[in-house]
Length: 319
Image 1 (cartoon, helix red, strand yellow):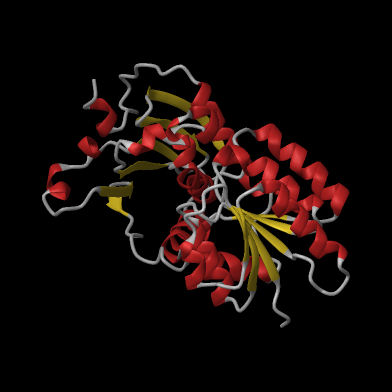
Image 2 (image 1 turned 60 degrees about the vertical axis):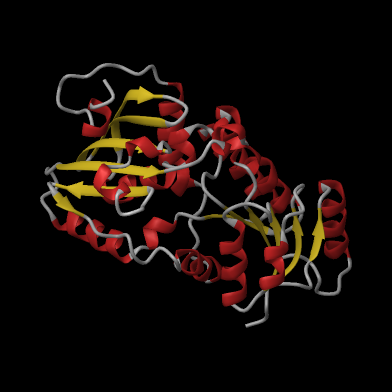
């Protein structure tokens, strides 16, 4: 297979190295990268010959020059790893540059942005691929198969908690600005909400019980599940027994009281995502719609008190 040519937007970000590694592992080439921050020495570990730009205008000109050269230099894919609020714009740039896009989660902040991207896909003939890595995790696939084999009318009781501690920098960065990150549910939770939809079917109800800059919780009901959820970046929410082990991250998903073990197998999910995308089996725009609708509704919801037992235990202890 002829090596594909990649460009990457957001080279200094947390997730960019996973994309660089995936491109390299798949045997392809990163030829250009952009980030307004020049702390991008990680590029040397993967593609030291890649051109790098700190001004978008010069990056744009370079990509356009490669496209017009007619010598097989045009970019095939643009990986979008920029801050969440720029994903829509940078994905549009990729398509208008004659390339397919590979966009990190969340694809966009609002569902109507998906409609705009669908129009540009039709206009350009290019495709938007997205990273929905949990759909490729063996444990998640196995759970989905198990749920599908159960009686159609059954509803499972699910508790989901994800606490990934962040320091004071978090709220000072774009991630702490709800207009840029979409808030906690969008920034650290959107792939879990996609996973829930992928396993348990269509979303039927969405209520928020708690919402702040650092944590959120609520209740979601799907065709085949009732879900109590909690997300946080506050280290004080990490259970004491976990903290005593020196760990600052806690993840738990139970289905009908049984813990779903999927802590392993995360390291190569971007590689798997790229394998699927390059084989023409990438997750497209519509596959993101339910998760984006879910987090957009959470973002604008008025938190309500709920005494029905639908409150996640981690939310209940905040009262």
